[in-house]
Image (tube, rainbow, N blue to C red; front, side, top):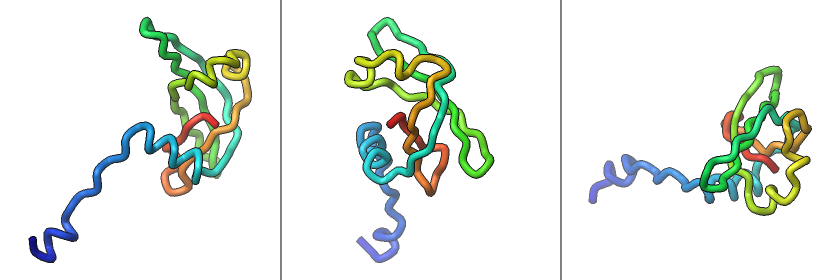
Length: 96
């Protein structure tokens, strides 16, 4: 393996679990608003939300964890929630 091979290797994309853990540990916090939610036949609940950073609106979605599902009113449409986002990529976010 040559010197060029060392620098040309692409980094492996993080798994969803790794991405979530990174944001919960290192992400900045902002306030967002729940837009809607959807429950799939397999029991997964997806929440759609939006938030604003530096005057730019972002819209995203996140699967609720089992712990988050225990408090359905906190994630009801119209509710204010904490969002953790990547300061280097503001579109990368999770519900806090």
